[in-house]
Image (cartoon, rainbow, N blue to C red):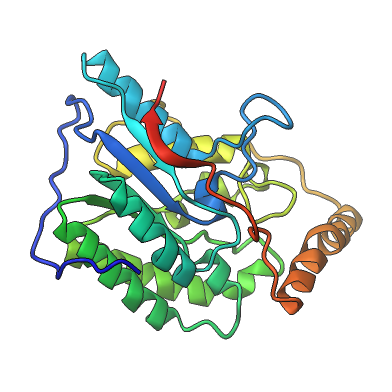
Length: 280
């Protein structure tokens, strides 16, 4: 990893609601969450978008409406990445792009593994955040999701809760912003989740993008961004059992097979937007 300077005390200024975003170059890094699985904005087969891309669009539109140049944006996130590779590979590449805003969101793939050392991951994350903040770059961190409604993934709730506590403490000490999916009521609805139950739908990504605006101290574009959806009729137990069996066959089993083979869904993949470019 490219050496970074020792951290110095810094503060993050909260923008006033009516001010245009001050950031000129935003770089996202992380895993599938920031890459944007499975948000296809223009239909199946279209390029992935995701909450980070949407956030960049919102920031850029507000800048151009105020007569400022559009936001420059790059996205280095790759699906399947663990925290160590994110910090070792994506951080030097991101800092070389000279951003003034970055989002560092990962750890979900680590937390799925029962042997994960959450404290070690958080300690390394804080060292990175401190070094990035020492360069005067604003940082957006993110909590993990609340998987209470998932029959299997909810077994990770204790680890996610511990990680989230670390994220909030790191943000307080280092002057970072926090995107808080754990606290979003709307994400407790399965209609916000894709068939694999660990990635968001297009509506889910859109709501998270609004949450990111709020996390950065900016007003959202829609007041109902976290309103729960109207409830659906209860699903019969037989239908639930069949859906769970299909999920195990089509998603859980392939994931476990890759784990046994020490493979990742992101092997041989490259970032979708490696260089900063203006956001239309």
